[in-house]
Amino acid sequence: MRLNTKSAFLQERIKFEKHLSLSGLQISRARKIVFNEAIRNHGHFTSEELAKICFNKNKISRATVYRVVKDLLESGVIRETAFGDKHHHYEHIYDEKPHHHAQCLRCHEFIEFPDMKEDERYRPYLEKRGFKILGHEMHFYGICEKCQNQQKMK
Amino acid sequence: MRLNTKSAFLQERIKFEKHLSLSGLQISRARKIVFNEAIRNHGHFTSEELAKICFNKNKISRATVYRVVKDLLESGVIRETAFGDKHHHYEHIYDEKPHHHAQCLRCHEFIEFPDMKEDERYRPYLEKRGFKILGHEMHFYGICEKCQNQQKMK
DNA sequence: TCGCATATGAGACACTGTATCATAGTTAAC
DNA sequence: GTTAACTATGATACAGTGTCTCATATGCGA
Ligand SMILES: [Zn+2]
Ligand SMILES: [Zn+2]
Ligand SMILES: [Zn+2]
Ligand SMILES: [Zn+2]
Image 1: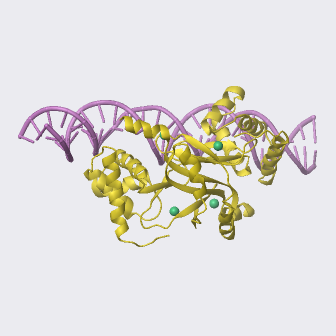
Image 2: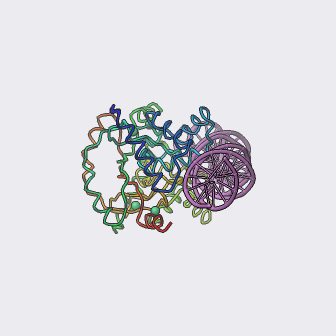
């Protein structure tokens, strides 16, 4: 689900650097590289995958990538998606239409579906309790078509 | 967020046993015990916690509990909740009002908030694609009040 | 009751995410 | 430009989770 706005990229970079400054963190070489690779990567990715890419291309260590992923998450550049799997999945916000995920309990595959803007009513509840919302996601879980058919065959 | 309906317990048991039958699985001693402990446990729990309880009380092995948790999940007796943490959290449906979760990116603590029944419009999208929905959950992520204050102190 | 299919237990295992700590890099003051 | 203080990084080691294997036990239908 890709858009294609060019200036959005810059906005993401600014968002990230602003977050770093506010948190008293430096805009270091490693942070820039991990940011770029996260943005370059279209679709969902795990920390492990990102770490492999960053290590192969730029010898950034696994520990560093895991650390930067947390900053990316808190800055709102990426969001965490998925559940049920033992891996955490991320995707960046840049270049993506708002959407949600439904995941199969068995094979852990996703279906993406578009946002319908009906979730806004939940916000006041949370804000009243002091929760600072960075994002949200609707998670449907169930069994995907493929896995249903596999059961029938068996 | 507890209700308190007694017959609901039986319904859950029937739901579980029906799922087992349909999947060609036996209604074994271990499966009954894990089911009972999952229901007895109010609030969220991890597989590991459930495994400890079942082992201490009934010498059910960790591997078995992990296996049964998957059946409980597929049968709809429990649902998986949470993300961001490295543990999977579950809660049973029995005796619970429908609700959603908002989780802090830092300390992984939850806020629960009630269901507002606005999520139904998403269903046709998924069903059209052959996805058999077992449940859904709205996930808000952000920073909780406590963690916001900790940052200010620092 | 027997024989076959399924379930279980014990342990090993792979992998993820975290912690530690020594080294390197960055920043700002002098 | 040098120095000192602070922050980031890399290279491990580590703990915990969820999975797998395979030998044994159990349940179930004939
Ligand atoms: Zn599937
Ligand atoms: Zn997506
Ligand atoms: Zn928190
Ligand atoms: Zn809950």
